[in-house]
Image (cartoon, rainbow, N blue to C red; front, top):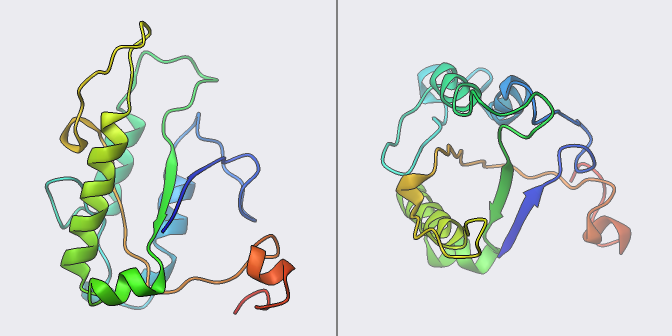
Length: 154
């Protein structure tokens, strides 16, 4: 399994500012939806399977009205199961969503207060949205590309 919290200033070829609106990130995550119409892949949350882009943007952009302009409003995580894990889940979208929700429960359990005490959160306590992607393309800084096992864009 590959899990990573994305640094918007350094990761990926398209940088974004997570102290502003999440519109660029939502557009990026919707890249595979072009031309699919009603067959597009919806965003999902901890308890809902069909969430549209405008609701995602509203929920995230208005989540923290009291933070300062330079502070992060949102974070982007990548949860990418290995090929054998996807086979185990039978590449079933419902199982992949359940898997993501379990990962987010574990993520939430690790939040601590300023005093270091566990906040006892679950995924339901987080405002998050996820999206399943079918295609993954190698970038120049992927290990496989640097080791010559894959080409950029494969």
